[in-house]
Length: 512
Image 1 (cartoon, rainbow, N blue to C red):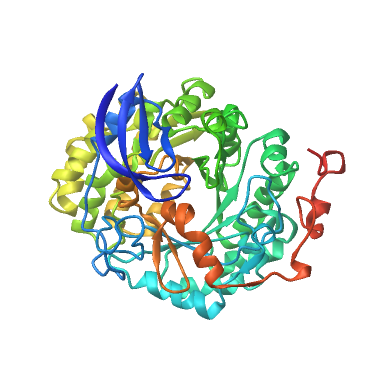
Image 2 (image 1 turned 180 degrees about the vertical axis):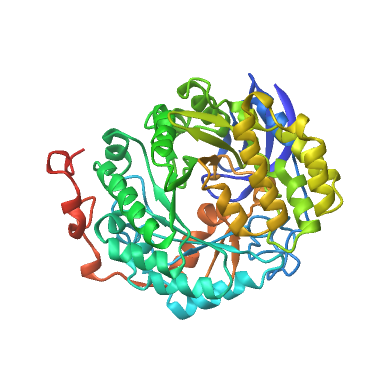
């Protein structure tokens, strides 16, 4: 057993901060902590020690927010707002537009029916919430509307348009897809209003994971959403789809390869897959925690095994690893580039080139490390292009010359263009993003990670709160503060609101 660092965490029982240790144990990274009242807790932190050390070499510390809107009083994670101690700015702002939902997932405790109240900010409140995050320095240009299920609001297209008019370049909607499968006109309105991406809940390619996680076979609904997006995309040029599987060991971890293959087959509208290892927001006993917990390295090794080595764990890089390229673009361009100073243990990603039923990771086409070195030492736009040309033999892998040149051309457009349009073209060239974000819960909570969070919730009283601290500590407090009593017609029995039951094949209806 080897001590790596000391930090602070949460007691999963009383939710108070407690001292914690990050240790290496049997080739894995573990978090250990002791609460004076509730005893000792231990959980998996990172399932591969060697990968952890590699990722931590990309550790970044940036300026954070230049205009924090709360003071430092009780320490992280209780001063959220953001406080002066936060070390990253907002890359993606999350606004829950409702906690109402047209589903009742067995694994969800956040919907209105379970909570007993409705949290649903008014359009006026949402305008002010958008203004708050837009005034943050550095500026945030991406917003996601979530819930509950945001599409239960008829005025969501109006809200999207408001966000677009306030200068948000990337607008995403997190959705289960029920309404979008049934109502293509509503989907068309969202697209015309300015929605770029649908973050589509997607648990697997067979009925079994859906029955466990959602209570019924939702796969036909997901397939219908893809078809509807394909039609609307041809008309409007957007939105695209990112598949978002919540990965639970023993439930759908054996399907990650098939999910990637599903994305490949639908790459005309599916821009990527963002796997999210399950986060246990509620209490869970030790045996269930150990049985269901999956970490980023576990997922990456599953991907390598299930894609038969086409995509390896080594093809993924942690998010802050591309900071040299981002810093170069910020020095030389007028475009918008985020501060990727998130903690290296929070997430990882790669791009793959799709060629029929084969994929080639970008790391097999381009020497990414060398590209980052060239970017880091380039002094200007023309200097960078010259360096790209001069160093092409050390950047391009010649045995994949056709695909590599295509990618280099797109990278050149991003360097020269310096805008979201250039980046968008990158996704239209048979390119698929595969990523993972592991959001924390009270069992694996690390204050050092929270301090570097870049995905933040915005609340009606103008607080900006890191994702993991919001869901572990603050959600119920803010929702109750701005909630109303649930109405009888907003309650429903079963797993799917009656309005959407016709979407479910009769032979596969709601039976567990």
